[in-house]
Image (cartoon, rainbow, N blue to C red):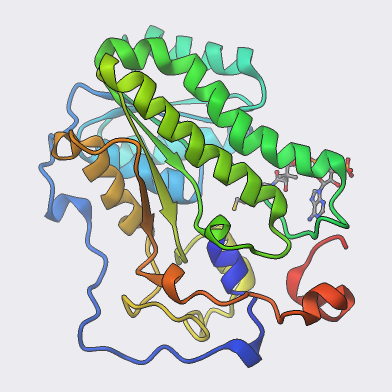
Length: 308
Ligand code: COA
């Protein structure tokens, strides 16, 4: 969502990202980590049918894990599972479930156990978002985002925890950076992601003695995602973004953080939040003209593409 917000910043707030001789390109995880790192292990990923979570799942499979991907759209999940299996040689099972439905998630976890006999790693990635002010967002819309992001993560934890305990495994929650500062039009997702961060920290503390770790990845502006493709001109994607790393993020950047956090190299890291944003959060300004966007929402309606 960060990228969606930042692609919408007013041109008057934009500054050009200067070319740098020190830009580090994104690398494929296989050039850094052992290819059999997760052989014999099983990943359970909500939201794995597309975008960042698909990339995280692909990386885990490249390093030997089998996977269960969970989402609402079975067609897309099935296609993704097929493509990831063909690309990696590992098994990937698509399971249709809405994270708002605890029973559906319990059945998805049961399917993972029936198929693979274990769950080692869980990515709580399913999320929903749109831009709307508190004064305009309906009670149902606010609740919907909380139900998908926060309660959906809780439901995912509940459905998988006995199995993750059994394997002394690990959780990664996909959050955001936008709630570190107040972000207009994002009360619903800010509240939801703050809840996700808190949930992960408590999980780490409660489950650490059982051998389970839990961390958060907070992605920044990641290129090649649906939001970026939809909202940013293809020939001008990086203008207006101030990113110390000198480039937009890549799904590989999030995937590499995933491999590290799930690996034994992160055995002493739990209850933490890892922004993967090239340092962008430290330079972030309001993504819409302020206070113009608040006082006169109609003036930015074309930019934010939402119901006001
Ligand atoms: N602005 C304001 N309210 C919106 C909205 C928007 N752009 N889009 C949906 N809503 C409201 C709906 O109007 C509804 O509220 P209402 O009953 O008061 O009218 C409520 O949100 C639920 O919408 P609905 O479409 O019925 O729910 P859903 O479960 O099918 O969709 C969403 C969930 C709302 C999060 C939807 O945006 C979605 O599925 N998005 C795809 C995933 C996504 O957002 N990914 C981005 C991750 S960064």
